[in-house]
Image (tube, rainbow, N blue to C red; front, top):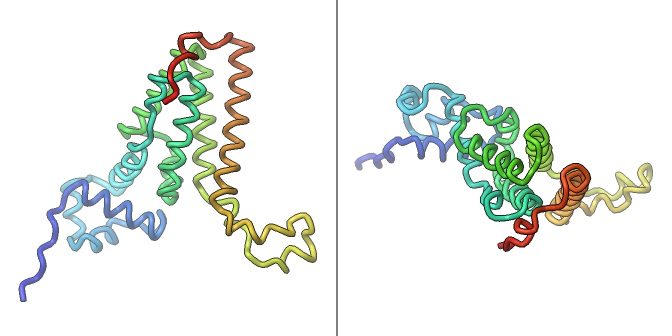
Length: 221
């Protein structure tokens, strides 16, 4: 019986397989040897497409970032644009949390990551923020999003009521947090993002002035 043919090795197939392995096993377990075995090829075959393991990780990271929506920075006021970007960014990272520590190192030379940074920075400067402050805002939102995607607050509590009953009376409902993971984690993110945006809006009004009426009147969707 003839052996089934392996799919032709391409950059896209390598990145998709690497992403699946990292999602399943985590970043520390990822290796080019493991990736080659999963693809059914010899390790050197990978280097026809990527020079190093870090280039593969860069491609995985950039694919994750590539789905983040920054279009609001050209069509909405800066507050709405930041909100839309933060939620889209969080969805991208929470879909692939194991790559977040690598993404946290910064955009490097990755095209999608640099395009995202350019869109955010450009939108904030056009809205009137000084360049230094625009940099701070982009960084602050990035820290907040990446931190929220690294793990689940709700899943950090074990489902054992007896653990809390004797010594942690204020946590007497903590054993129920895991079953409400999505509402707890998303609720916490929404609250924190609202607080961040309200604070930025207050600083903008104090130091720069009200939003341009034309900007404020733009459609929200």
